[in-house]
Length: 347
Image 1: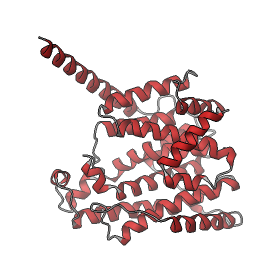
Image 2 (image 1 turned 60 degrees about the horizontal axis):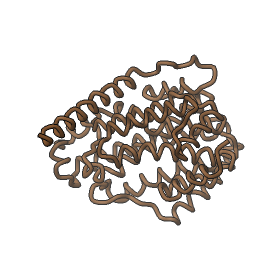
Image 3 (image 1 turned 90 degrees about the vertical axis):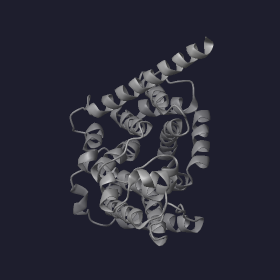
Image 4 (image 1 turned 180 degrees about the vertical axis):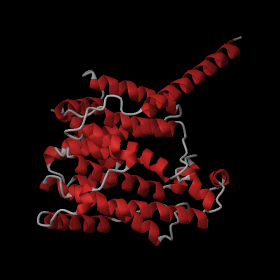
């Protein structure tokens, strides 16, 4: 049971932090909406800790400690931590899921770049699909096929985010477009980062990202139809709102460097209404064969971690421990340098 004051903090955090998620959450039943908002508040906290802090490695390592306290039943005395701890206990949330999110944030802290679309999907699996699977757990859905489609939706939404934020990310020294794609289009990645401009090669890469996302949006719908009926409108809404962002990018000629795609309140209302219609249709439509498609290779570990009738995954990813070890090494080096500088100035 989440403390009411902690729950109010989470509601306020989402109301000011994510208009799209806040709008979609209104269509969830309260029994799911409150834990979903608590989950999103913790994920938002984690993301902001890395994005907004100068010492990003230290921020991720601190998040790792906070997660360990949550799973030890001794959360840090902060509303998001306490709410997330209550959620973990109440829903038996597999630890591999929030750990995957932290690994993705660790990759961000290391300013990792991605060679190809598979590498980018692996990143998206961690920062987005892991959240989608946690949402599925909150809804009581732990069937492997449905979880695979939740992963598809998470990747699609993250690829849309990346397509929308190319210019904004570049100005913050972040690059997510696959390096091989850039090379194929004659774009010098370092030159683009030094002076982000709209150019044909970038537009083509953005277009390709959105094509991958659209294919996954379509496949994900078969999983939404497996959720409890009262949960479907909110997840359909998230699917349509994010896909709508992709539509706005297309209208701009795939220019997400000099502008950032936005959707209006009228559009969001239309997608919310369409979500209700799709929910009604899903109640009578036969199952699509797409439901049974294999999970993406990059997201299979998330399905294994959460699905019923799957072996427990106690050591799901060597890359997780590698990422944390690299961050710890980086942080130790930074501290040694800081201490040396202090001693030098003290003489």
